[in-house]
Length: 301
Ligand SMILES: NC(=O)c1ccc[n+]([C@@H]2O[C@H](COP(=O)([O-])OP(=O)(O)OC[C@H]3O[C@@H](n4cnc5c(N)ncnc54)[C@H](OP(=O)(O)O)[C@@H]3O)[C@@H](O)[C@H]2O)c1
Image (tube, rainbow, N blue to C red; front, top):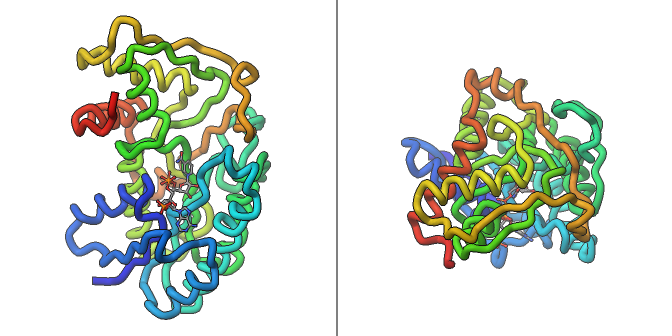
């Protein structure tokens, strides 16, 4: 079995990938060191680990993902999201490893007025967004055969994520005030993992599966739509107290330290055409995550 170095194995995408590979016979022998053991804050150590272990595949699902905290910790965010991925990519190229690097819809400002194609000019706002964009560039410069997969609004049964928060708050019978003027595509981590796995298989015999590809679930939603979908599912399951509700608010009414893209929908058609399939609609994914959260008792009310 070929060896895969997975960074971010404790995160939503990293967990989903490992779960996907557990059910796929003949997949990767995964080395997923925790950040306490191998940190992207020490890029040289990460590169040395790659040179020493010589994996056949490197997947970087690790990032400084706390978008608001990044505004007050720009140096750490830059090292983790941009400098370390660049060094990781250089090391992967040196040992001949395939590299998949995760990135984000935040590289766009959301004012483009149409779904963003992978080659659309990037317009990041805020520290997280800029460092992730710079990470993409560093990776592709150091390792042109690498695959950068941009995704968005990831949810899973591993909190923190918006769906998990909504389940917890709504099951307590609270009324959630949720922005309805930010639009994107909620993406279930398990679904994304299947797409990444399929892209990996496609990369094997086809060097054109490289560069930037977009991968989200299908459809578009506002955060308000997502909260309503969670409430609807909890209602069907008999788990929504009568007092629970969702109220739309504007971004201006809900200021946060980091700016968010307004309408950042990723155009995934090239990915879907390459794989010959479209993923489920986001509502299907949100329902699955709600069911998983309440079924596993992962949400403490
Ligand atoms: N979540 C979203 O909505 C979303 C949307 C678009 C794109 N993405 C991108 O998708 C990727 C995966 O996101 P996710 O939601 O799975 O992230 P997540 O659940 O927030 O997990 C982040 C992962 O990064 C690891 N990490 C953080 N700092 C690290 C460091 N210094 N060294 C090594 N590992 C470190 C964490 O390890 P510890 O547990 O040890 O801290 C954790 O495994 C990221 O590239 C992110 O930018 C996410």
